[in-house]
Length: 336
Image 1 (cartoon, rainbow, N blue to C red):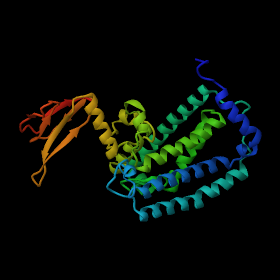
Image 2: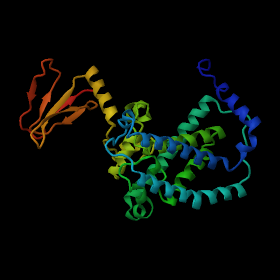
Image 3: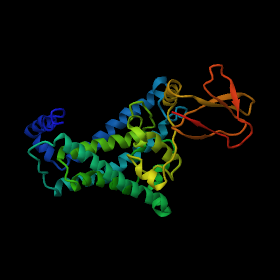
Image 4: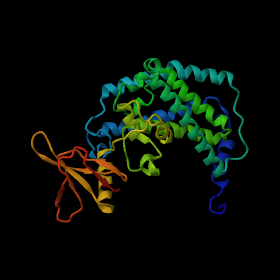
């Protein structure tokens, strides 16, 4: 294994260059703040640019979870305004205090090995995920906590990138505190701590972006272990569900997990995968205007509830339909 993965050389070159050329910057107590703020605004500007192009570029819009609901300029200005106010009133004074009172950070001689970096990142993710899950759950179960501190974040049922930090000062301080302290508690390398900080902000913005790309982590990590934008979007519509910021295991264990919707492009892609690999189960439903509409069902080896007066279409090459009768809870098993 050691021959396959260069344990130290992968990071040592980068760490040596940073220590020799930017040591004072690395030791500055202001660096974590600069990294956090700059990363956040760069990512929001990127996703905000995508939002502005959606009306002109159809292939971008089809990857939005709510492709029929464009982001309004008024909503963006309101969210940006609160974000700037929080940074000026709370983040900037805290940064100045940290710069004045906190001594320069000590730097390690050697870079972390690949194993140390991976374990440190995973540990920080799991710890932060657990902390915020408890904080989030408490602020939804307690009416006073929700109304006083967290309700402002739920003003937008369809989140977009700038909603990430559209929050109260208490929530902003809580999240920032854990992001900074967790690598210290786990005794991670300085490089690991900064990497976790950037990754944490990226995931937070991506969760609120409203986009569902094929390369999004929730579409790459198997078994639904990663929540992603689709589950957090559902949380903004059904606030009693999907509390975890990263993973899904605590929501599963506590019974707070909920079904979610994909973007139109991903729905089409998943449907094509169904057609290629498994029997496709669809239903025909009569609309109010009298039209018959065929609706595909795509599930992961679970029972699908098909309403009454529906017709299940199997993979019969002739396209013959099999009537299910008027049973209101008629079910069929679809494989994906």
